[in-house]
Image (cartoon, rainbow, N blue to C red; front, side, top):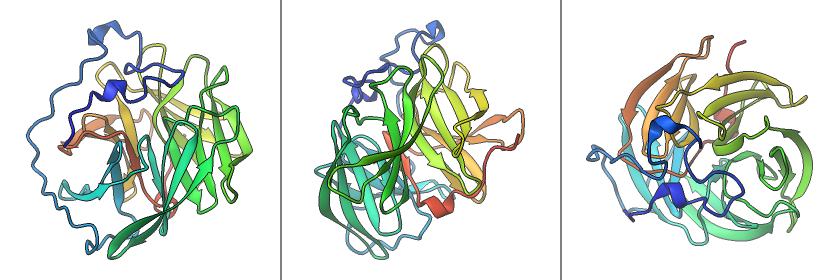
Length: 280
């Protein structure tokens, strides 16, 4: 695997490139904890791997993996160029992004196959596509706009060559998307942020933009780059590969589960697999 300092992946975006900035308890904000020796198995096969509909896809820049939380194993699916940034997928489409461009691939899960299809321009002034991506369907993505103050969560129609904004709501002041965005079956947006101290997990009403939950992830949760669901349970996957369970009921207790053995910059599942929200 390429050796990349993940704290520098998003250095050009208009937010903090350090994890959950201004938290003095972390010492050097550019330090990435060492990864323990991987206990996973990998494969370079990219044509014959059978993947299920709710497969967890993880990426590290242009590298993509299929991850199984049940046995803590991953399969290397290949390098994707163009690619980078975060990742999103449906059952037959896959997206990466970077800068001002989305990169769309035609996707087949069983057996796995992905072929580059087209590029999609971001709508100006959204020109810093680096963090936070989720696919509602083949024509609709959710991402973040880092050019506004406060930052916004925006929904984009990508049916044409240039994305069109169709909905948006604001993040809290001085908070920035740090990793991932998901939309649940209950029409709730769950996302992770940094900025102004510790990282936070937020839940919003997607229709109204009203904030419903603001969960402080504490001073040990850094780089919360992925959100996934497995068997109705919500998990955060950190940049260094830690899998953290989130209790869906207040006070939303965090429970370390395992370490993937991977560095990640994003995570994705088909939207139909995100079935549960945080209970109020």
